Image: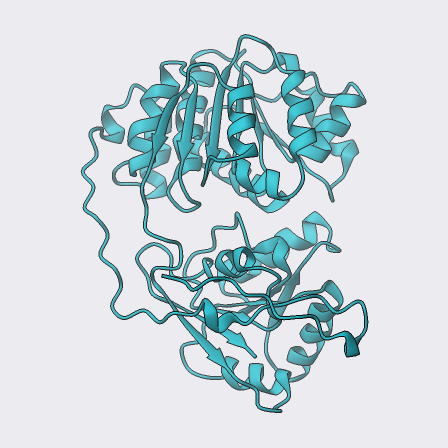
Amino acid sequence: MYRRFRPHQRNFNRGPRRQPTFDPSFLVKETGEILPTEQFVARHKFADLPVAEQIKANIIKRGYLAPTPIQDQVIPLILDGDDVVGIANTGTGKTAAFLIPLISKMIKDRTQRALVITPTRELAAQIEAEFRDFAANTGLFTVLVIGGASMGRQIEGLRRRPQMVIGTPGRLKDLQERHFLNLNEFATIVLDEVDRMLDMGFIHDIKELIAHLPKVRQSLFFSATVEGKTKEVMHQFLHEPHVISVKSRPITANVNQKIVKLNGKNKIDALHDLLIQPGFDKVLVFGRTKWGMEKLLKSLTERGIRAVTIHGNKSQSQRQRALTQFKRGEVKVLLATDVASRGLDIEQVTHVINFDLPQTQEDYIHRIGRTGRADKKGIAITLV
């Protein structure tokens, strides 16, 4: 069990801009062996699902062998046209759980259109990439509607009446208000990572978007937790839904957490000494500010370490390019602010390093949850 979160008092000698942080020693725990995964036996096989044959071929090409728990339970319900609440963490296969049946329905009826609303640009781009994989050779297409990218191109894409629109609340609301996006045309609506959207302050945007949706629709709602305002949105959004909860172990279960005390050592020197050690193959480094991450990038580059940055000042194309380089192993270090701590599904991250302390216990948990995924062990290091 993690100990209770106890914030430090602010150090007023450093000026009013200094943000409060906390002592991570209250959170850190070390893992031993990787925790065993409870054996799951799917009731369905992809080959037996009543979906288009082309989708089955695309599923095989992706290397999917059997449905995950969320896919096994949710896909048949969506195919039947039911409303669904899926309670599951990132990395459980929930994106495929809604894309596979929705694409199949679109193949059978080309007038079917779906809107997917997500909290971050990165998650929206990941969903679009998965749509392209599952919808390959079907003639279906999608438009990505997010901030940081050309609105003109998005408007042109919407005029082509794509079968699926994937976007973030702010840009969707903007285009709806400018009458380039008619929300009443979508028979299926997906709210993904709703708890994260509400954490980011999108509740009013979400409620306004819901108000413009058709009364008769299929509504799909995915969240890691359902409580407080999340439950309020759920009741407003859904009609007699099936609630599917996929139990999973804590996202930090396979993360070995460590503290490195600087004891007066230069922080960049300490980070450099870690990054050159064997086994630091794919490292996600978190910092507090955009400026700080750019400064750190320059320092690491001068020391011969290949790194890229991702933060709010980057355009969407720059952010996506950095993520692609990191995922492909073209660079070993991704420097990020907390914009990247949730929603991203990056495989085989060996280490997460907290270069700057996170603001809250929740930020800490989501940062270190980027490693130790899919039954692999990860290491999280916090510099203090």
